[in-house]
Amino acid sequence: MKITIEKLVHGGHGIGTVDGRRIFVPYSAPGDELEIDISDERGGVAFGVIKSVILPAKCRVAPRCPAFGKCGGCQWQHISYDDQLRWKRTILAETLERIGRISGASVLDTIPSPCEWHYRNRIQLHVDAQGRVGYYMPRSREVVEFETCFIAEEGINRQLNERREEFRKRTRGVALRIAGDESFSQVNSAQNKVLADLLCAWLSEVRHGSVLELYAGSGNFTFSIAKTAEHVTASDIDGRAIREAQLRMETERATNVQFACMPAHRAVQRHGRGCDVVVVDPPRKGCDDSIDAVAEASPASILYISCDPATLARDARILTGRGYRLVRTQPVDMFPQTFHVESLSLFTRIGQGSASAI
Image (tube, rainbow, N blue to C red):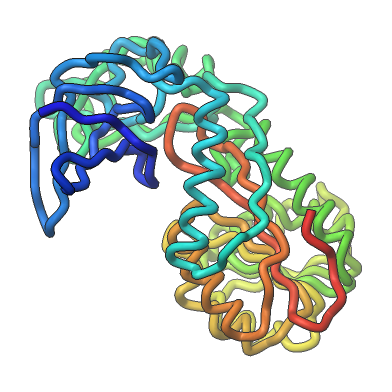
């Protein structure tokens, strides 16, 4: 079956149409002319596998990693980096419109990562019964080995190669990280700083005397926020992360920060009333456990850090239905060579006269 790939969608697949049927094709690129076989059909959705590339898209490039296409770590090594950035912005904007029902949202150009390769400060590997050490294949428990992970920092690859034989004897997974990065909640240290600086810049544009931060972890963004705000209350349900954050307070010389160990919705109920800004950095599932409480607290502004366009769009739809407007969204490429996209969005309560869209 021949197909022309029209676009990329969240999840990393390309999509095309054959005889009125939409088909998702992993490892394809927009503009590809392909020969495919249908590999699966479920719920009225068809998935294809590439048999051959008849005519490659202009954005198609040669992947660096020999395991690409078998290993589940990356999805977009075959797409030029500039095009990855453009498609992440497009997918984010389309998702805000389709799920969030926000037409014409101001989605800015994606901020590129300082490093396109070797950026991850930690990885999680698996070990199988045959002693293979690597990532899982997509939608599989089969382990794919590799000599070098091209998205992991070089120090992690050195650790892996020095200890590979030791790891083969394990009966469970292997977590590797760069020493000194234990406090970061983001896997891309350089881009993490870019995001923190952007967060503080946007925070300074709105009234920000009192800030409530939800899903704060061990204070990844908290201490940057504290340099801008008069007072910060930061909460997380993870007691160990909160204890680590409290230990960092002296090193960071932060006297205007209060940490609280509690669920996000309870933190809003206890500390949200009267605060100027709520900052949220939820897990992939979004703020499904706290978004109503945030809207009920009615802060003048909400800064939303998201790692998933779909849950951001869902929560944005709730906020815009509760008297907020989406001023702007900034995609940030935290995960080059993959479909994943981080973003920062600014919401303001209608009538606040706050920051304007760029």
